[in-house]
Length: 127
Image 1 (tube, rainbow, N blue to C red):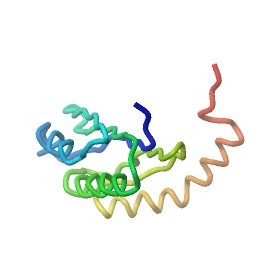
Image 2 (cartoon, rainbow, N blue to C red):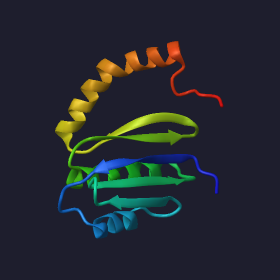
Image 3 (tube, one colour):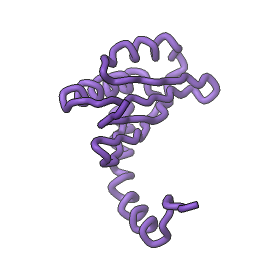
């Protein structure tokens, strides 16, 4: 199946989080999107990947649902990778105060990281 949208990442979750909560979240994500998830009890994390051939309204609904879910269950903020029509970006999820801190961090450090990546070609290994 070809897809135009994908979002994935690991969300640190609260102690009371259970597999049933992840399953209920997955039921909220309607076709044509597919969702894969795993709950890691050791690190108390929820790993999520959602993708599909989706329109703008479907993407917005998914991200709104994911944002609401993360505000309820996230222990801390997380940066999820997002791809839309081949363009990569980052979505910050979690409690609002953590999102604010991650946003401030992104503003101050990510331009430097991009500069270093260009200079040393980090992340572009060609074996």
